[in-house]
Image 1 (cartoon, helix red, strand yellow):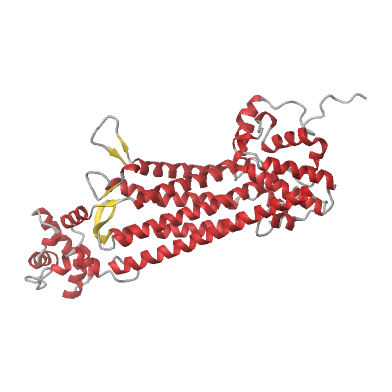
Image 2 (cartoon, helix red, strand yellow; image 1 turned 90 degrees about the horizontal axis):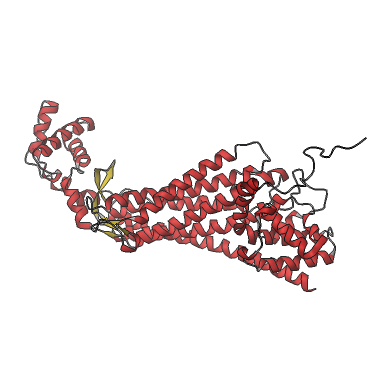
Length: 500
């Protein structure tokens, strides 16, 4: 009986990949190879050491493999012959190792699918990016803390919906963005706990019959332990979603600040002025200097929101699918890199920002931001409920606005007139000295509750934020040093193996 020429979709294909597949698929993966290059080398070294420890691989092939891996590790990624026509980065490495070592290169596949090396390499790269972004955020918080302390007494009209709300200080406003950034630091460090677990030695999906030493691989690479379930180790994506969400949260916080500053940097507001290096001139209109840095931050935030949404759409597919992670190798690291870039950019904006105190004070005096304090004063001084006080103060400031007066110009007589209209009686406010109630600076000084805008409270908060940022920076640096040490010791172990 003659066997058919093609037994169907069984076994590896014998044909070269279609050029369309190379262009749309493999080229995408090869573009991510530089991000994984160092991690792939380290993952391979740890795997060979583990195989040798359990005598799965003979001594001489192991030595030759390790010698070549050291050579490739010292080679910049752009000098390695990654070739999309061969498939992904792993295929290019396989071809190169076979050309250099012949069948000895085949030992590298023992007990390990291609995806394991990629998963390990991704985590090694991500942990570096996480500690880097954490340190960048700490620097941003330190810059905000310095700005807040310097402007703890810079009184301004705080705004909601771009309308004057209540008197506050620019220092109090600035710290609005320090606290979310510190929380993002904590999120990143929690994400690091997830990232710094080893999928190494998991075998395929159900483990391996080979006596793989998973703990040795984890220790050699500086991981905090192994991911227990072998199938989960290969396919988990929830931590990557967390990382993308945290990167998006980082940028969203920056974007809020950027949008406020873009409005306030305008001639119409003139509350702040960006330093020249963070702006760009109009090539047509000589009078314009555009806050270009802020547009970059806002745009990057939109890109990160899109990447998070796109990744969520990808990972909803059934389990154990390559498309769950093919895009993660590039999207997740590049998202963290982008978040780091805009964080450093906003740190520079904040550190060099000019705050126009006089213009803020002038704008504050033109409005009615004292209205809430005035209503509370009427409630307490005249023994009326807050809703009634609210209505009569509202009527009084409407009349003041109609007459071209300001909040500081409201008088007891005006309040009594409004009370007569709203309540049918006066409150005996005529002739009262309301200057302290209406003075924005005096109002700010009353905000001594925890978290308030009083200058001494703002300075205390700024000091704590600065100290917290310093502690976060030290934690990130400690982790980075630990990773450096683990990778250095792995290289030294391999060097000792090849010279024995």
